[in-house]
Image (cartoon, rainbow, N blue to C red; front, side, top):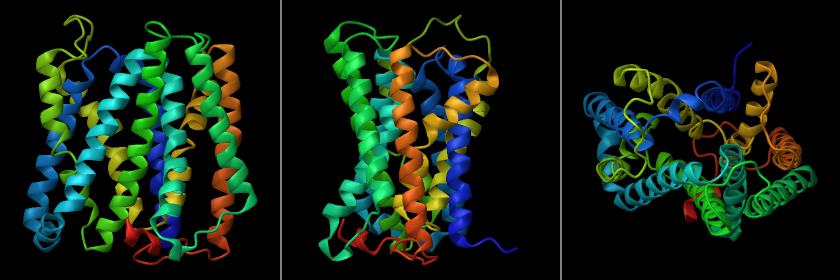
Length: 328
């Protein structure tokens, strides 16, 4: 049976979710032992160099189109840098499970809001299941924010002000990611492929990460990580860079709404992998918030998938999945 473009895009999204969850469950403790900005500078720096060289050799026309679209290039780099800086800082302040869940939830919420405000002509419709799912995600985010501020989420590095800062960083990071998805769709409509988009998006983050390393923003004791730097970089390429590239590949094959909704399933995948691992370490209040969130994410993705089957704009195998995004 032949796989359609939309189905292939969905597979890319699921690959992204699985690798992100695998990293959080099985490699999370490893990455907590190292300077996140240091490993980020190496992984994204190598990705930038490799993709730019490949683009110059194989996709020169696309590369010129990307450089002509300076407004998108600047906006995309700004959002990517904001995403990663806020996410890495948030993980240092509040419980990682809360960070990951709020971040993941803000992606479909931010996408929905931005799509609706982008163009009234797009007339994006949402069915009841998706609306209820998004509402439950909002409720879960608010619940997790409250228990974090009250100190019942399991981990906060400081008082309520630190907790509030962590929550706000999560919200900013997820919202910036939603903007990245929509900008990527618009850039693709202008003839810029996934290889170039993936590489050029880190141009701003790399110097910021290098400065953060020099300032010791996330410095760890030098003896904390037992692995050599080359091994850590290789692992980072597989579980940090590769899933992001899979997500970029999905941009050309399915709608931004589907991408955002599947991304929201990340915490559910983490929960399943932790069940298989046999180790659940969530605080009871955090577990309650995750339960609300997972239900909302499943309803949201089922609603969006139903719309895709019924031919709602943005669900077909078109080159430009979301016509309303041209106004962004």
